[in-house]
Length: 147
Image (cartoon, rainbow, N blue to C red; front, side, top):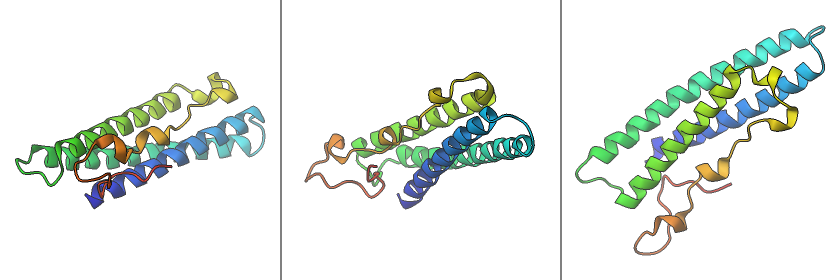
C-alpha cells in the first residue's frame, strides 16, 4: 500500500521535473547554441536521461508490487481497488514511454515550442468516487489525492 503510493508520488515528481527540463532545453536551443548554452543543453539532456532511467526503475518496482498483490488469493484490496492500481500502473508506463520517445527523437530540435508534450497528472490520479466502493466513498490509502 504505502510503498506503492510513495513510488507513484516519486514517479509523478520525476515526470514533472523531466517536462520542466525539456521545456528549458527547448528555450535554451531557441536562444542559440553559442557560449554556455551548448554546455547547459548537454547537462539538461543528461539530467533528463537520468530522471527517465530512475522513473523507469521505480515504475518496474511499482509494477511488481501491483502484480504481487493481484496474484494473492486474499488481497487486502477489493477487485475495484486492484483495477484502479492496474490502470495507474498502465498510465504511468504510457507517460514514461511518451516522454522517452519525445526525448529520443530529438524533441528540442524538431518541434515547435508550444507543441511540448504536457504531463497529464490529473489522469494519473484516481478519483475515489469512480471506484464504487461499498460502505461510502472513503478512498483507499494508496489512492491519489488529485491535483
